[in-house]
Image (tube, rainbow over all chains, first blue to last red; front, side):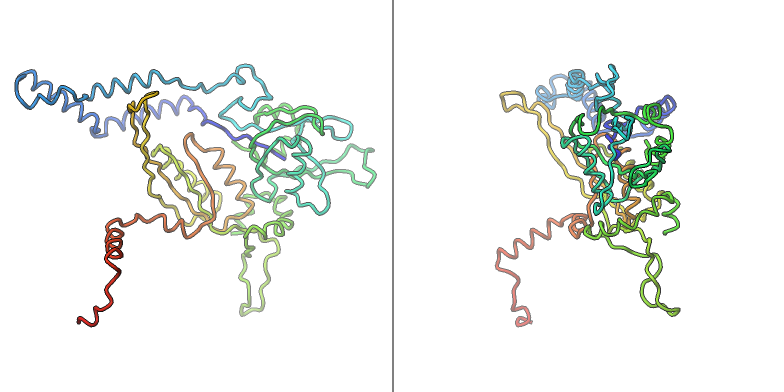
Length: 231
Length: 192
């Protein structure tokens, strides 16, 4: 069961993209016509000039209380300076807290748990056995709540699995039923909330990006996963 | 259509589809085969056993306040869906919802600032979405969703069609006046 926290913010532009977008913005600015605000400002300046030349003319008596375009712009600038922008990198990024969901807001984070499979504890996506009579999707949902606790809420999109991994049990340790391997079907789900609890099957959990998973997970397992995860 | 779809899904995924049919029946998906059902002149044709269940017409509503970002993103969704192999039937804009936001000074009625916002909306309609591609499409849309954009996916209803039209205010006013005056006159024929 591949639980994903989708990116919260868009990725930053790389160098070429930044320069190109700046250039496009400049081209657009040069090609564009004057906006309402700029026309208003120009009218104000023309009016002021006329007023300087002819101060006692009755047309200009109403001008005392109106706000000029410049005032409007100044108020806008002041408002902008008072506004604090939330930084793109959070505290979790700085401390590299891999259990936190607030890390790496522009990447996808996948839930990886340390589960006891047979004798060893392995870093895997939360997994469990399929019971007879249960469809694969129901199994996936039930597995998530049984391993990670009732708290974790995830929304599975679609009834079909997204990936598949086949492995053989190490020779000599075939189960009593005579099975010598297993097939794992992956379902992808969007993470909605909750914190995975250790104890029911998992010993530890981490929220990792694709590269971090490549380092931590079994190589063949990761190559099966990388068939369906993308950014 | 089936050959294009199988290029996208791996072979392993296609083999294990048979269980999916029973679970999808309750969701209103219809199983469509790629060969014609019913009798043909060469004899009865059989339904494709491995046909992937498909969804009925689905509308993807994309809403946002930033017009440039919204338009580009709607175009991106449309193009990506087509490139994956999904049958995109239609895409249209919906009337923007205008809203007036006033920031009021604390403990007074003075308006500090006023903003006129418009919530723009674009709709991309997909038909016969295979359930295998539905997950992928949702994944792509959610991953590439820009800041400030919301999207919803719903089945197509008649209400969605009706909401495309700008209501004719003059006509409605005249109709209201007519009902106030007592309805349309019935003795027109007599007068002639």
